[in-house]
Length: 125
Image (cartoon, rainbow, N blue to C red; front, side, top):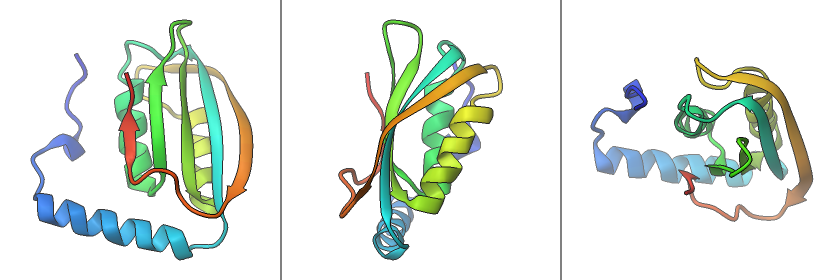
């Protein structure tokens, strides 16, 4: 079981909605939007990697998703302003969850997009 992050504490739903709206508005005007797929290799399952990835994505202000694969990796997609996507790419390559060990992270299908395809960042199952 993963310990709760401070961000997992009860939140005021209206405040969260306002922050989401303002974050998405900022994303749509913050320069070129990028999309990139990723796969993280190493000790990344059973170490709360997805939960921390979701938390970091929301902190940085990107959208997309993350999920475990059946081959022991974590995969997903990140979208947002180029600078924020680059910050998330760095986190996925070098930081991860406290108990994880990242051996390598592969990025693919990096492209400029005209609009975001997601409204938030989510964990897929």
